Structure formats: structure tokens, C-alpha cells
Length: 55
Image (cartoon, rainbow, N blue to C red; front, side):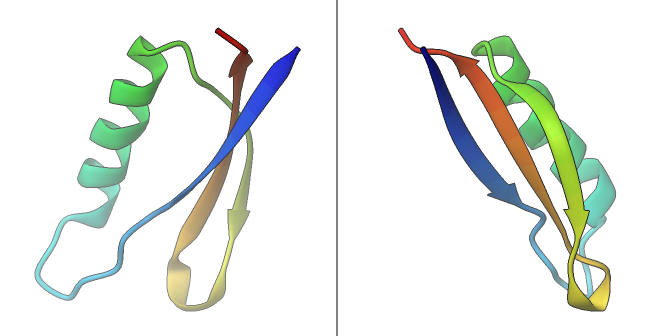
């Protein structure tokens, strides 16, 4: 069975959002999560849908 998680890229004027989002996704990948879809939301924010086998 699979489980799913939605991760949202955090917005901020003084942050490098891409780098922080990449770090977060890589940390989740080390825990077995895999990105299966990415959606672009308003104001250039992203939501990623992740999946992994249930523990």
C-alpha cells in the first residue's frame, strides 16, 4: 500500500526558495519519499506530491 504527502514550497522575499525546496525534497527522499507530481500555484509557488510504500 502507498502513502502520500503534499509539500509546499515556502514563499519569502529574502529566501532562496528553490534551494530550500530542493533541500527539503532531498531530505524526504532519504526517508523513502518519491516525487510523483509537481503543480505550479499562484505567485510562482510549487506543490509537490510525494509517495512511498507504507512502513
